[in-house]
Image 1 (cartoon, rainbow, N blue to C red):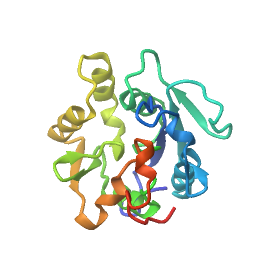
Image 2: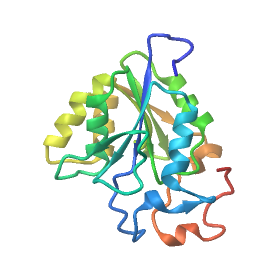
Image 3: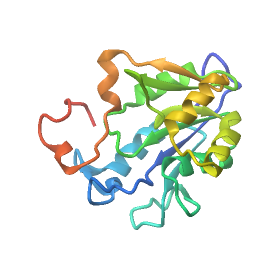
Length: 204
């Protein structure tokens, strides 16, 4: 997929499925949501965008990993999402990388398309809900690759800190999320999150 107002922009995507899932008690990627595992649902959303390439990032080899996708395994020791993002930015051949976490099943294709529309040359976009950035449903430019590599080699693995640095250097813009769209960024972290009424009724 290309941004219609700037044909020089190209997009890859990475599905981040490398979390430890400690609170869930099992691999979140395999949790069933609306009759299908989360990894399959999220991968379908990304593929519907018709991007140049879709990567799947995981901590280690797992039986569920799709054989028809390019798999990126974390280099040990894994630093969580930071490891997956750093590797995807290193491997991609496009101008921008769209990121989606496996545990955010309320995210829609339309919202991700809108994020792509806010990207510009050399600059991505990170949504902000309240005062907190949402770095796992965002877009990063290839120019951010050195910043991710440096963060991975340093003592601070916080994506919140890294996003602030990228915003200060003009490599991402922070995009406030309207209140009516905030629930799109909710994530499933523990079994009780699946209880009826815990989350809004969003289409799968």
